[in-house]
Amino acid sequence: MVSVENAHSSIKDFNDTVTSLSSRLKIVEDRTNLIPVLEKKIIELDNELNQREQWLRANNVEIKGIPLKNNENLYDIAFKLADTLGITLKRRTVISSLEYLLGNRIMRNRL
Image (cartoon, rainbow, N blue to C red; front, top):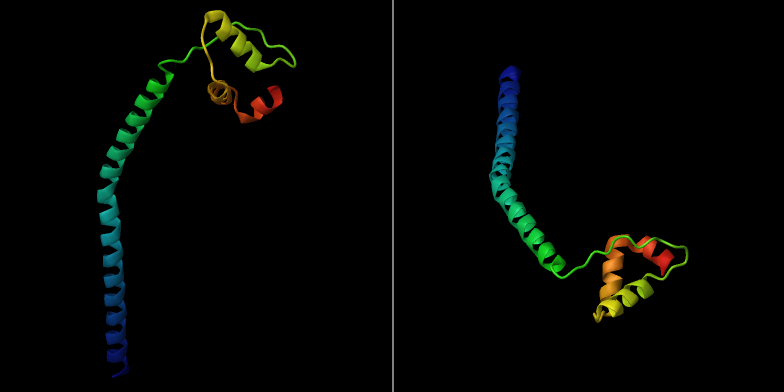
């Protein structure tokens, strides 16, 4: 009688394990089905980001060939160049551009 009870107990444990694994497998399958949808969304967001970056760069000017000097003021250089070209610059525009190009840490040391 004891071995029959042990067999019933083992079968119940086995059934519980199968039920648990089945529900966990269902969760994994649901998440696996979501992967292509998420990949497509990532591609869409990446394309949108690229388009916005291109739009933001549409009016940017990259200046090359100005040698770096110790204790130079990048604002002065930018504003003198803009004045020479007849362009009006806003200080915030220059700050944003320089921060992007040089990184915040470098900017704090150079301004």
